[in-house]
Length: 288
Image (cartoon, rainbow, N blue to C red; front, side, top):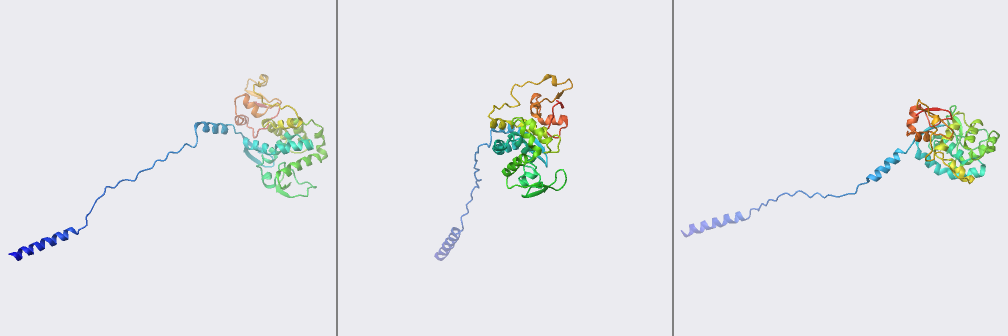
């Protein structure tokens, strides 16, 4: 009996030992990771947006066509003027050529520095090689194919050569008898002397001078008071406006000044009148 009891206890103790060695399994509730929220400041405010919009609206598209067709905006032209106005005024003092004419020709002939000749040859005035040129050259299509144009090491050299070109040739001698402040006479005189074959060349130069107030640099060199063409409060000549909603271009008018008179944009005027560029002439009738 005692042996049976002892055997039973031994079996029970063995079972208890086996049960105690089994691993304990624990379960955990999965907790999703926390999301970190980072607050950032807006990149622009309403004021910045309004300013950017206003700047975009005031940009005028320019299609400049001379030795090449170049499309730029008015801020590019203003940047060009800012870059070269000091050189132009220096050449006016040294050589007697109005700074306004120098800058207007530079804008037109170089596409405000973005035209083909300006980029490939630093040629800002469309000056061809001619027989007396011994410097570098570049081939470019103009009136005919594969014409020879002068190439310069930098734009400043082109500006200096432009002054020498005008002062050293007899056909331009009559220009230097004109008043230095009369940019209209100089623009027409350049065309008459054969600088360009485009009949609208004077009108284009005058248009750039008046729209970008380039004649202020003439006044600065001459020590005169500068009076902008488009003055606040300037009234429209009512006699020039007909009943057919057309306007006859007067002396001193530009597309920009006319657009302001009739609350239009320059592009509106050009579209209404099928104008390929900003050139207009005195007596021309425009639909407004």
